[in-house]
Image (cartoon, rainbow, N blue to C red; front, top):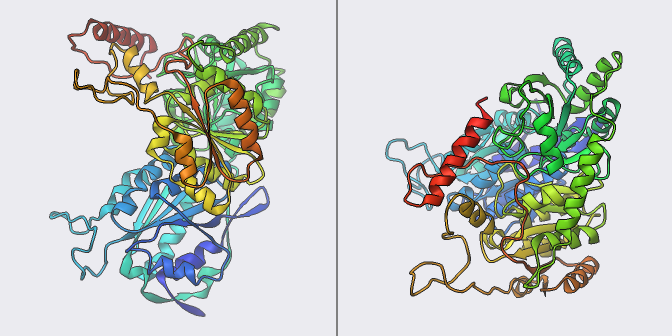
Amino acid sequence: METVRLTMAQALVRFLDAQYVELDGRQHKFVKGIMGIFGHGNVTGIGEALEHDQGGLEFIQGKNEQGMALAAAAYAKQKNRLEIYACTSSIGPGALNMVTAAGTATVNRIPLLLLPGDIFACRQPDPVLQQIEDPADYTISANDAFKPVSKYWDRILRPEQLMTAALQAMRVLTDPAETGAVTLALPQDVQSEAYDYPAAFFDKRVHLIERRTPSEAALNRAAELIRIKKRPLLIAGGGVHYSQATQELIRFAEKFHIPVTETQAGKSALSWKHPLNAGSIGTTGSLAANRLAQEADLIIAVGTRLGDFPTASKSAFGHPGADILSINISAFDALKLNATSLVADARVALKALSEELGGSSYRSGYSPDEIGRLKAEWTREVERLYAVKREDGLAQTRVLGVINDFLGPEDVIVCASGSLPGDLHRLWRCEEPKTYHLEYGFSCMGYEVTGAFGVKLAEPDREVYSLVGDGSYLMLHSELVTSIQEGVKITILLLDNNGYQCIHNLQREHGSDGFGNEFRYRSAKTKRLTGDYMPMDFAMHARSMGANGYTVTTLEQLREALAKAKEETVSTLIHIKVLPGTNTAAYESWWRVGVAEVSENPKVQAAYERMKTNIEKAGVL
């Protein structure tokens, strides 16, 4: 048997460079490159391997481990999980910084390969710098923290163990039903140890992504359920994009006259102009979608894990005889909310269902103008919000209207947290698929800037805009520098409302007068954060790192800055001052949060009673 003597790190790099996936007969190089920050624990192992590698992997230098890993997750999401960047870090703090990104990827079913350095397997430098010592279990290191947020976890204690672990990692990363974060903990001494690897281990390997077909029994059961229903409602989730099922979804909806609603991950599956697009669903849903959901006797959930936002904490579906049909590649997700499950690829399932129902001439029972009337009513509401005028400053919804009007139909927006996801889900008008990139499974603050960098790597020919609040920007903006270093232009639209206003609003909605959520100076009188707002010049901050920066306080200045930013070749930040509390509110929807059962505040007591009423209304599934 022919062998090649390599260090474990050299073997890993060469192996990753030879991995491909195939979908519908088309091959994609699976690992585009490696993002990394070097330190003790990976610099003399993977660092040495990458420095002298003659293969095709790109290396991108991160500025924060969480930031680069979120960028990698965003890249994979935008590429419909067909391409990835791996991420390498040192041990200790460098590794732990990636745990949040691992959770984000796993929750969103996005492949993310993490390669954190680890303590010495030989245990001779003991304790090594940054080692966590557990007196009860000396095998534990910081990397054990990845276990609950990874879909596959392994520690390579001998160089030959790589061959098994690497294949298992690829199994999970390339499986649409199982994918998420994969962590291979790499002890720093083992990375540099050599082994005679079989040459065949480095041959090109193509992982076939099969479109799972539904069983005949499950398909018949699903079709029979639809046939007896008069008011079905489609929910498009992220799986519609990942399975490239947008056109099949449109054909299915049109053929059977079924309105379509969208989750955050599913939004842009069909154009907002389509007559059957009723808009967003759930807690951050449109009035049209939520009213249809209340009266629907069947919910057809396609590629969604049915979290608490799309279901409005299980209160969105009000029809007493409502059933749920869940089409999902994952049996785990397909069973949620006591659904009738159709475990299959979304595109295959919709096509098969269409053929099965076609013979019976099925058509929903919606009246000819019902969906159009609800859609027209919501369109007027969006236009009203986009036109809000305030004498004391800019309303957030008005700013979003200007931005939406300026951006081209092919431009991509990226967001994740704060009040912006609710406004964007309700109001943003998408015309083309994959132009709305929201991370809302984890709603990870700090994803917006780093995610935009990852999306731009995936979509170099599109303009990519990060929509971010001041709170989330302050939390993580490190990869703005990386975008400049790599010559990858992104535009950051920073809506500054002086704090964590989304949570401030949530707090006050449940009885509080507001506490600890605004960026104010500490008051000498109250001893709390009740002083003046803290002025921050975010445009100057961006310029200090090499980006362009503009500050705008009027709509005219905003339009001018947007035009300038589009012509720029370097990343640009536009600092937009908006008035707190000028975001959208719920439209006949609810979101469950825990409210204090005992409080001296009568407003909190009232909020607790409202919560109990809503829980009773939602029932238990």
